[in-house]
Length: 307
Ligand code: A3P
Image 1 (cartoon, rainbow, N blue to C red):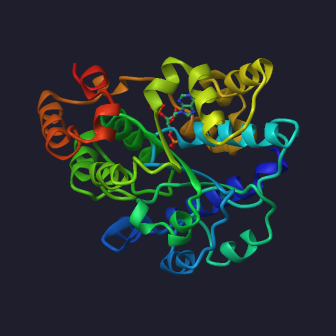
Image 2: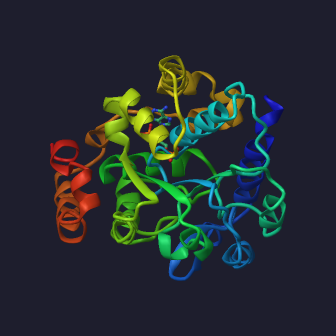
């Protein structure tokens, strides 16, 4: 195990241990109407987060759970390392990278971290500390098609004991569609973020477009954050962030949970789970709630979510 990722693996291991002795209904708590895992989040940390002071050069990745946030986290950390002329993959992770996850004192410790600080978050924009928007911190917003997100979320819930597990896919689907999963409704997440989409400090990218053309995606992300890249550096970041490379390296980066974080890494696995009725249900909700929005259109639902 690479010691440099201890902040990640230790917190997950602690969460799994906590979850193993919790009753199912204790595993989540509600904060401002949204559910979060008790195993790794707390009302105290949410309170402390409110007064978190962002810096204008923080690098933020926002994405609903299972949208590929571990993938983009590596890309962004590599880009930061390049901007500082450091060797890729060698930096020590000081804090668990998801902003809302961890103990309430974490935000005090983050005051001491050198710039630029990287942080990921699954939070909706209205629940992020206001300083992020006041300081116009650059945010990369990652979105993935809802059918693959739900599929990935189901497997993750059954693979990692920080979340309640499910006997059947049908049970999970029902909860996913009725906001009973961690970090709340996917559809509301998209609708809320859509309100911010035209802000100059926000760039949206889809999992599917990055999968289709990783070099172009990485190039655009680097340009958005103002990080110049040589062709060689670009190729290195792309190669290091391929699903195969990340899965191969996952025991070092994510410990014994590597296989849970890096499962299939593809598009359309939902076809193995969704029934006709579930397809119709999700198509309808997508149409009603997000299809007409900019973010909804960006997802190319007809290409990635219609059989
Ligand atoms: P699957 O479960 O469909 O395989 P997150 O990191 O936000 O938890 O998202 C996890 C999803 O991203 C998983 O999807 C995982 O396999 C996928 N993923 C992780 N690294 C990836 C990579 N380098 N390329 C493509 N997909 C990746």
